[in-house]
Length: 128
Image 1 (cartoon, rainbow, N blue to C red):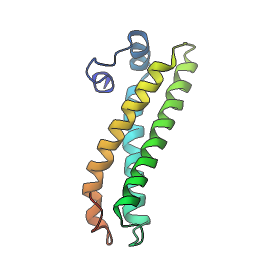
Image 2 (image 1 turned 60 degrees about the vertical axis):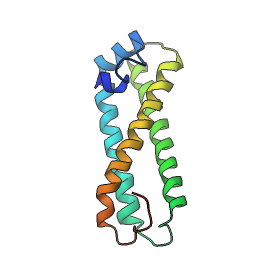
Image 3 (image 1 turned 120 degrees about the horizontal axis):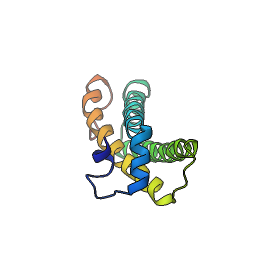
């Protein structure tokens, strides 16, 4: 998990990455991303399933809002977990990890969207 959230060493902050790995933040973030993406896909394709919202502009705006929500949630979660350990880090690590969370959320959302779209009645106009 550590390599995945550091983009294979590109965004490595030594002490911050060690603390995130030791406290299990990376694994918890993965489950947060997975759970939220499944929830929002289920909400869009099964609950909201309406021909009114079956447009590309609504789909992309929904995707952007969900990804921003996930990124902000992950930022505050990481900050809370690190503060429980009584460490002080600059905001650079928190922001970079929440942006990485945003990218992985987008990837999972689009992949799950391809699968869950088959269960929707009105999703023939959405791209995924």
